[in-house]
Length: 208
Image (cartoon, rainbow, N blue to C red; front, top):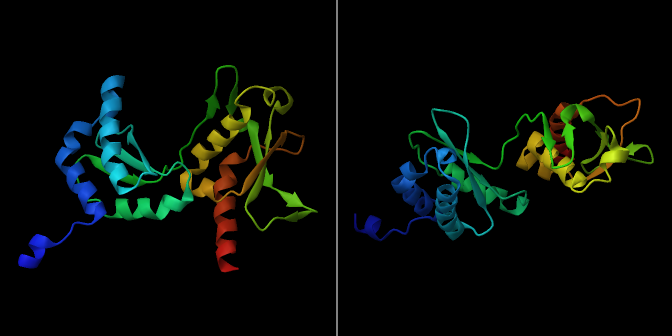
């Protein structure tokens, strides 16, 4: 009993003890005013950055049954394991779902001020060097109306953001680089198959 009194809490338990005590204030955060939401997110981040300064949080979701707490490294793979350790240590708290890293979603496209790109405007293929597929995960993305859209501000950012949404944070981190090119007559809208390609390629890398 005396030993338990002086036992030091793990960093993960410190965060979750605080969150469990305060969690009801953060429920349905997406329904609160922008100012209120920002203050509450900052409050979570203050506690989260005591655990690691390089991880971030998103609170929300579309379910009426629970609110999602997504902890993300914003693509920095150096902190993926630390986030997974934290989420694996999470207690069960009613009306909450805890997620390590931004999951993939099913966007129909992405829009910026002066242009939009649909997933049907994208086609992927492995990047080849001298006709051979690279050992690294490298992909070529072909885009309809590339000649016009590629001249617009934020075009490259829009493509990378859309890939990030489609693949999710962890899977997208495995992609070493992306070439973006003009759509051609051989293209077909197949971007939704990209995740299976990356998983297969990743499995092969681990076996070699």
